[in-house]
Image (cartoon, rainbow, N blue to C red; front, side):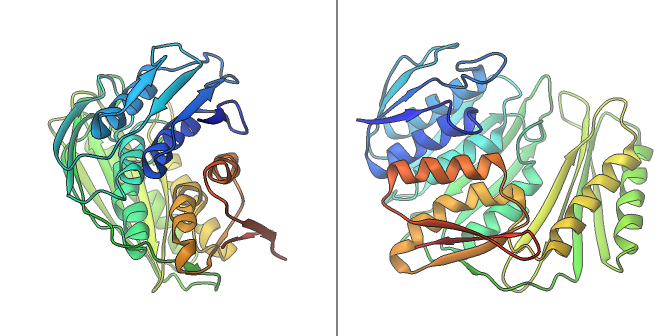
Length: 343
């Protein structure tokens, strides 16, 4: 049984979710200790419990110690079952973080897997639904992973209640990512979502984002989507830009007391930093894409450029090396970006 120290590096729920997904993918039972040991409230929280339970149910696996507050679990994987599955996270826990783990766990499925899930679509400390569908999924599609999505309803903190469907198709092979050359990004697209809030908030956020990007002569198209059926109020913005080879993005969630203009400006500023740095994968996508780059190594070397290595990315590099015999090089560039090479 493979032993994983859940307190390593960033030491959050990411280690737990990714380790369980990789356990299913590699058929290696895992023991995870010190779960979230460095957090103010350590141990398994409801959203982490839901993620492990969902993957366990997808593959009919077994667990030991899977309890709220637990700092130590064992997981025994089986094969992912095709067909339709329905899960309710039970809180405003992130739908996108759970689905990312489900995709990774399901890469060797022989039949399509359809997951209908209820929870939070746009919540703190997680990719927004629009980031998931417009940045992350296109990147793994380029590598050979095919999915379909449908957003039924947005879900915000505290009530959640968002609904989405993800269909994961069998993946025949995963292709390397060749992104070591600087890309040209000419246009930015975006979505602002708004629930139970005045229309002017969306308009002000949109105006601030466009104004910030225009200073860099970047053409921008942002759509404001007003949601009428969400259970809680909420707002946020996701921006992205495509080159011929890749997609980079940024996302910001609205907060009480923070002006809409600041949210829009900050989202635009973050994306400008990514573009001007010469990055080919943004700092949010890097840790999410590395597992696929490792899996593609049999087909050849993968490479990309990131503006900086986040703690999440460093932690995922370490975790992947616990499961796979792989070389992951990080080479600092002259402009302080980092080139990732996996072979």
